Image (cartoon, rainbow, N blue to C red; front, side, top):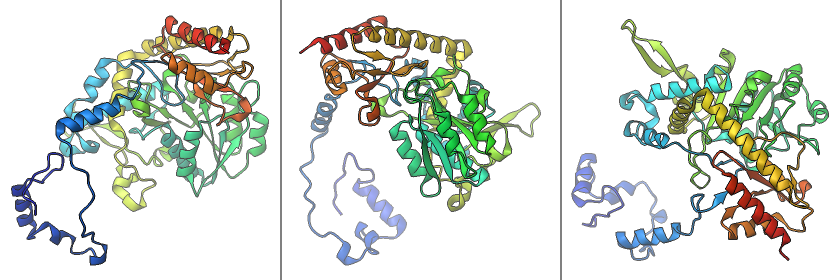
Length: 463
């Protein structure tokens, strides 16, 4: 045993190692590996470069990180699943508190108000989507959608799901992975002009084996799906469950999916007080009505409120804990893991700050700014914004097919001028031609949008 402590590896202080070995009754660390066959043990010296000092290591890592360009330095119009919203400082202040940041899964022996904080989040989120029950968050929208589909399949015992072709390709991959091999994913065509789900194709693909019909509002391509009631009615006509994925930042101005027939609502919490973190900071939610058939199929934790033995006193705790994999383990409906409960608390802080009036103001501001952006971009010769003849919320498809420039060319020009352009759709949706998905939120000023329009005009005019 080397008599040397390592600054980054715990329990390498010689005295600490000796004490641990005495406690477990071993003479050396090597004894711990006696169960590994001799031929599998590596006996040579590992070719590890000389370790850097702490200062050298920090300087090396800082140099790598300095290559990143963030939305602080660049104006950002990229969304497509991770959006640039304003994050109130109090969101960071609360979610960094030790009782929330370090409490593993909120277990009772270390809980300091976490159960109540998550109950409050669930209550606020339920009010926003006009549902009764909301779960402790999943990892992201994709997992929330996949789990919702699996819930539907368990409820009606069917093994197929219909999804729109306009769904995010990355989200679809996760859904297919979660559903495989038990549930088959079938895509439904969209109308070329509007992007809306093609109801004729939907009807053709309905059958007694369809567990659920899933669609999103707003869609991945930004437009508002106006046929939600008809889609839900068609799904229910064959006994399928309606699942709607939603961007919660839209619900101050758009009707929640529960108003047009959704049985399960899911989506991403990232717009509600979470930083983009280079694509991270994702967290999904699932919501249903207070129906025991649905509640029993939630694999994740639910927190409720109940009176204690003391009159007038209330406590917070798990609801139907036995449904989770924490209780059932290998017999659980799905493996739950630690989830992203911290982001649920963050979303709760955000929703409590804004309230109904604030969410309305947020949605109205985004709508006004995105409509202005579409109008200005559409004034550029040979540019079509938006590609679809539908109402858009904060994202919209811009068609550059008639400009003689590719999306790649335009985005490179924008990047060279300090702007993150739209998501290139030419590979994922080749039938749309040279199109890009742009995102405008409350953080964009008129000057930001005008700067984008000017830069695109200059790029198109350049030879």
